[in-house]
Length: 431
Image 1 (cartoon, helix red, strand yellow):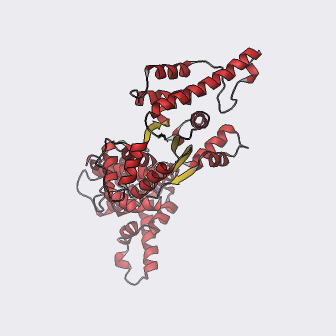
Image 2 (cartoon, rainbow, N blue to C red):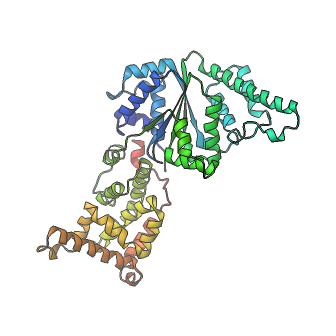
Image 3 (tube, rainbow, N blue to C red):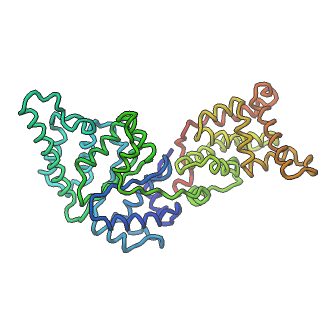
C-alpha cells in the first residue's frame, strides 16, 4: 500500500479529518508536564494509524511548520512544546537489519542532527559503535563472564561498559543543546525482528533513562508482549515486563470508518463496485486505516477492469456488485476465508455477511421481489439470502460452473489483478 505523504498527513492534521486532534492536544500537554524519565506507548493494532499520529506530533513540534491550525489544537501548548523540547524520530523497522540496536540509534541521531554535534562528539560516538567491548547481547548477559579468563579481562569489560554508558550520556547532552528535554519517537517496533525489538527496548532502559528524556514508542502492546515472551522463553511474562517498562499507555481513538472513508478517501457510494457492499464489508470485518486504504485502491483498480465493456447484464450484478467486493475484503482481511469463498465453499461466509449488509441484501432482494409481496420482512430477507446463495453456487460450485462460466471468469480475472496489498495509488492520494 502506498503510504501517506507528509503533505497529506499535514492536510489531515489541518482539517482534523481523522478526528484525532483532541488526542494530539492531550499528548502535547502531557509531554509538557513531564519532569522525569518517561516511556510512553502509543498502542494500536497494525494499520490503525499510529505512524500518522506520531508524525503529526512531530509536525506540531516543528517550528518550521506554521500552517497546522485547527480549533481542536492548543496553540499555547504547542508553542511551549516547541520552545522547551527537541524531538527525534526513529523508524525501528527501517534499521532492524543492523545487528546492534544502540549503534542503529546513534547512527540515525548523528545523521539527523549533525549541526548540534561537535566533531569530537561524533568521533566518540562512532568509536563506541565500532569498538569491541567483549559484551554479550545486553538483553541476556550484561557482561560475558564465562569467557573472561583473567581478572584483568573482567575489569576491562566492566570499564568498557561504564565508558560506553558515559559516552552515551555525553552524546545526549550534545544533542539536547539549549533544550530542556529530548523526545525520542520510536516507530514501527511491532514490525521488527523479535531480537531487534527486544534489544532496542533494553537499550532504552540501560542507556537513555534520564530525567530529561522522554520516549514515545508506537506498537501493538499485546503483540509486543508475545514477541518478548517468545524471545525470553515460554515461562516469561511479556505483558508484566511491558507494564513495568511503559509509564503510560496511550490508546488511539478508534477511527470512524464512515468519516475516514468519506472525508479522507472521498469514497462515494454508487460508483461501480465502490459501493454500499464494499462500505458494509469494511464495517463488518473491522478494517483498520491501512486496510481501508488498500481495499479502496483495490476496488478502484478492479472496477476499471469489470466496467471495461460498459454493458453490464443483469445476471452479472451479483458477481460485480456483491461477490467481488466481498472477496476483495476477504483477501485483505482473511486469506483462508478468501480461498474458501472462491473455491465454492463460502456459503456460510456469504450468508453471514449478507444478513448483516443492507446493500448486499438489497441486491439479493432483486431476485425475489416479484414473489415477495405476501412475505413478512423476515421471510423476505431469508428468501433473498437463499436466492443469492443459489447464484453463488451456480457460479462457484463445480456443478454450476458450466452455466455461469463467463461470470466466474470475470471474478477470477478481477481478483487476480491484485496481491494481498495493492500498490496502486488512488486519484484522491494527490488531492
